Each structure stands twice: as C-alpha cells, then as structure tokens.
Image (cartoon, rainbow, N blue to C red; front, top):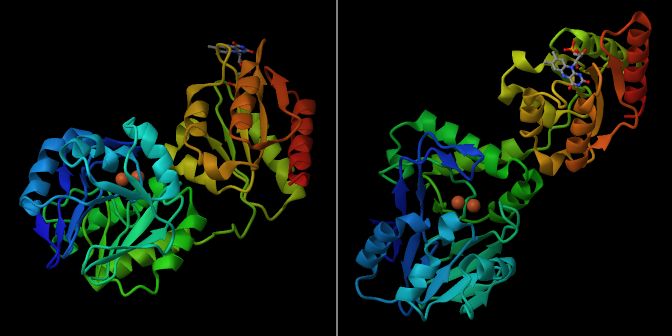
Length: 398
Ligand SMILES: Cc1cc2nc3c(=O)[nH]c(=O)nc-3n(C[C@H](O)[C@H](O)[C@H](O)COP(=O)(O)O)c2cc1C
Ligand SMILES: [Fe+2]
Ligand SMILES: [Fe+2]
C-alpha cells in the first residue's frame, strides 16, 4: 500500500516473476496489477481489482487501507481478467457494492463473472460520480485496448486512472516513477507494451490522447507499471504514444517478397518477380527476404508496414514450411485486412503449400491477387520471363 494523496491510495499487487502475458507478450520485467482506493467524505471507490491468483495479497492490502470501511463502488476501466479477476471474491466480501463501468463492459462482465443480477451502474462519456468531496469523471476510451475501455479522472486531485493506457509490464517495487531503478528498461517496457497492446489501434490512441491532452494532469495512474508523478515522465509517455501512433505512410511503396527455398527454385522466382515489379514501379522499395536469414521481429515489422507483399511458398510434405507459418502468425491482423498480396513458389507433385498459404491470407482478409505463380521443380528461362511478367502485372494491380 502507498498513499498518493490525502484520500487516494495505491493497492496494487506485484507479479515480478511473470514471463508471458496474454500469450502474445514476453514480460522479462514482470508486472504489477495496479488498483487504487479513493476514500471520499461520504463514499469509497476501488478502481480495478487484481489477477485472480493474487486475491490474498490484494485483500490484505485493501483491508489495510479500508480499515473497517466498506466499498461502495468498484470502478472497472475495462473488464480484462488481469484487473477483473478478483471481482467474484470481492463481491462475497462486499455484496452491496455497485460496479461502475461502460456499457460494453456491463455486457462482458455477465459472462466473465457468471453472476446473476450484478449491481451495475453504466457510465457514459462525461458522466460523473460523487463520493462526497471527490468527483470522478469517466472518459470513454474504446479500443484502448478493449471495446469497453474507459479512463477515470479524479477532478479534485487531477489524477488520471488510465486503464492499460500509458502503462507497461514493469514490476517496480517502489511504484513511483521518481524511484525507477532502471530507467532505460522502463522505456523498453513502455515501447514493447505499446507495440503489443496498442500497436493495432493507432487511430484510437490518437483519439485517446486528444481527450486527455488539456487535462491538468498531476498523476497518471495506469493499471500496470509505475505511477507517473513527475512532469518529465508524464510528458515522456504522452509524447511517446503520440509519436508511435502517428500515421506513417511509406515515402516509396514498400513491397517485400518473403520466401523459403530448399533448392533455390523459389529464390530464383523471387528474383524474377522482384525485377518485374520494379519494371512497373521503378521507385518502389522491393526486396526479397529468405525467411531463415532474418529475425522474426524484422520480418514481421516489414510485413506489417508494407503496402503490398508476396509470399514464396514451396511445398514440403504437403504443406508450406514452418517459417512461412511463423511469419503469417506475427502479422497485425487488425490492420492487414485488404492489403494486396500475391503467392508464388516451386513445387514437385502436389503443391499444397500454395493452397494452404492462400487460405491463411484469405483468413487474414488480405486482397489476394487472382493469379498464383507456380512452377513445377526447376524454372526454365521461359518460366523466369513469365515470373517477371507476373511481378509486373501484380504491380500494375496496386
Ligand atoms: C523433403 C521434401 C518434401 C517434399 N514434399 C513435397 C510435397 O509434399 N508436395 C510437393 O508438391 N512437392 C514436394 N516437394 C518438392 C519441392 O516442393 C520441390 O523440390 C520444389 O522445387 C522445391 O523448391 P525450392 O527449390 O524453392 O526449395 C518436397 C521436397 C522435399 C525436399
Ligand atoms: Fe487490458
Ligand atoms: Fe491490463
């Protein structure tokens, strides 16, 4: 427990040993599940709970702050179980508390808790809740990062409870930004968290920043990682989010070709297609990448920021090969929809590599070029000329 102001307390739980979060994230610095108590003159609010496995620690901490007082409101800025995990247990202790959340959150909460007749107060953008001498104002923040996300603004203290926004997986036992022991690691964690959690939603990030930019923020109280109290750290996080979410159109059309090859045939096709694309679009940035020679992060970043892309999928044992699947499992599925894509490759007899890769690209809702360029075993000179033509045609379709 830490006291943030006369009536506001931090009651977060630390999870320093967590190494994977939400399946998709490495968490080498662990995390914290931040929660806060506001003791108003007449009523008390708890903001967020904790992960279900931290109930005992969480309860001890809130009990020490409450000191016999009840909880009137539980504010859930979104319903992901890292923060809503203790709701059911909490309701056993405080059956009369009212949950305050957004409309979609109310819907999700029914199926997250499986409790009938939850006492819920739905709040809309700009609604306020009075705790006597403290006023909470709710700010809709959809898709930051769930559809039900919102921020909570404490008017008298100028504290922003920002949900996962501006937070990070960084287990800082001293809690406050002024006492971060490894500032470069914090910055690392802030960026990685942004990439994984908010990267798919840049326009919502911009809208969220717009909503809070004129608030006289004194503290940012996120749901994970250090509480930001210094001007420097607050400005740093806001500036970083602004920069990272800014739309970045490529100066030159970026059209990477990704391929795998066991005997060099698919590689030859990649080179011929590359030439063909450049024939049509001489200013485009067109490079071919043999998947086993580059890191996953490099390849995924290229694919995600491309204007169009091609996959060279050979067939081995009736399928495309694992590096192709790995790459296509690291795409930003939210933003890759409608991205033009084309397939090519060499095969021996049955050629399932193409059909299976095509299915994946269709599943991702990419705009798949009608024609696929397949060659049986070794491409002849005529095949290579046709591959070049295929590249030129694909480029014309962009
Ligand atoms: C271990 C192995 C398994 C293969 N399995 C298939 C297969 O199931 N179906 C098929 O059409 N071709 C199969 N092939 C043939 C390759 O797709 C063919 O040799 C192709 O030309 C390889 O292209 P590359 O030179 O780009 O590696 C297999 C090749 C190898 C080496
Ligand atoms: Fe979340
Ligand atoms: Fe979270």
